[in-house]
Amino acid sequence: NKSGDRIFIYTREGEKVALASLGLKGEERRVHLLSENAETFLPSPNEQWVAVVERFNAYIAVFPPTGQPVNIGPTTTDYPIKRVTRDAAQYLNWTADSKKLFWSLGPELFSRDLTNTFGFVEGAKDTLQEKPDSVGLPIGFQIDTDVPSGSIALVGATVITMKGDEVLSNATILVEKNRIKAIGASSEVTVPPDAKRIDVSGHTIMPGMIDVHAHGNFGEWSPYTNWRYYANLAFGVTTMHDPSASTEMVFTNSEMINAGLMVGPRVYSTGTILYGAEGSFKAIVNNFDEAMSHLRRLKAVGAFSVKSYNQPRRDQRQQIVEAARNLKMMVVPEGGSTFFWNLSMVLDGHTGVEHNLPIAPLYDDVVRLISKSKTGLTPTLIVNYGGLSGEYYWYQNTKVWEHERLLKFTPRDLIDSRSRRRLMANEDDYSYMETSKSLKRVIDAKGKVQLGAHGQLQGLGAHWELWMLQQGGMTTLEALRCATLYGAEYLGLDKDLGSLEPGKLADLIVMEKNPVENIRNSEFIKYVMKNGRMYDGWTGDEIGNHPRKRVKFHWEE
Image 1 (tube, helix red, strand yellow):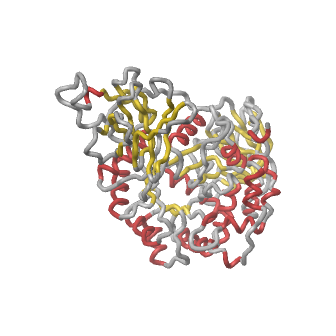
Image 2: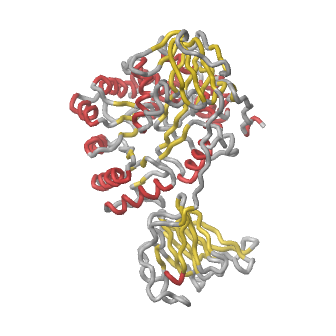
Image 3: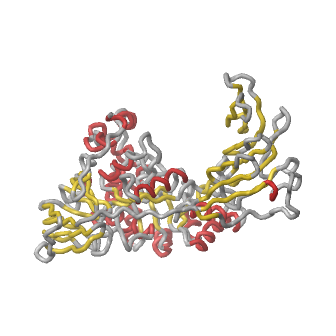
């Protein structure tokens, strides 16, 4: 506080959140403000005002002058409180004289003078600002995207290009900087004398895997060496899309990776979900304007997709879809294991449906609806609805706790706690297999299915998901296409990712065995290239034109 003898704390008081204060030794606890859902309380330096963030928006209120706590919220009418943001606020701060509040949203800085907000303050304007500002002061900056110099030629491999069913024998891929310059038979591709030549004879190359439902739990002890990123890279996942993540953390990490300040896959995300159930981060959508506000705030910080999650009414979900059309964004909803919600999502034009439809088998009417609508299905068989999930099948049938590559990039305690004391069940208890058979029917009907591993075990889970897609009857190439090209198409990135073609970004996997011969060979990875940089699949060290050792993880220190 301004006197230096008390500390303000954010705490709980019964069923409500509270702004309280304590003496320096923890004595004399006082509760000043109570709220149903406030996420932030920020008293002004003179302790006459307080900024409150509730359900994303910022409000300014009078700091209670008495010792009695005051209940405040967005609908409060009997106490001085004013909303000052249109869509959302992050990183609030008061000026030293307590006369102005600053906040940011994405690349813009906003502010509000008290004299423009309350008529009873000294120097108040004759006409107060009623509508929050829609445009702030630009404070963003630009930095070059990381692009490695030099060229690399991968010579002599079998190449699964994902251009139809094309598989090239004894082929060469020439990478210049971060894009594929040439690809074809080794006898037809000219390798420049200054290119680093890597002999990959006897190996198989395919595009990097794209995990479109990859929960990364972003935020680690050492932000520059996030083991989850490395684990995914080591297993060949070169692109991740997280449909539920901390908005502030995930887009920060994404930009740091793009700038070359962190190592990891390409990271995309919805940010925080548009949650329809009760809670402090509930996204209230009762009209089109509210839907637009939620999508604007997420687009401002870097999202090109949003996750509509448990919005209970169909008209709410439709308003989000319409807002997304206006802002040119994707909507990737989750139906909460509710079949009729899923069908309405398909009918209403959502980009896709995250998690499996909870009923299997699917019959012709539903299969035709999904395929004709071009709605992408991300079944996440690893956490399959409607029965025993796929994750447990692999704990039962493989010794996960002995997996060398996984142990290299994942803390031992996390692996042991999930895999050692295994659930054992009959194979016909694993309902994901029926789901997988229905996915094959969708593929046969020219529908689209893409891979999503849900972050259950970083990296390895993507291979489990791939194998489970094939267990339902897909051909190996069909399953691999779900893990690569279809994921790129789903995210709108197929002009640059998803297949190995001249001009596309150089994201690829070099495998010691051929997954076309046995799909379980997909995990035998020797090298991973992401954005033209080559990494050793066993160590995480960068090799190629710019060799550097991986920084140790916290458990290796």
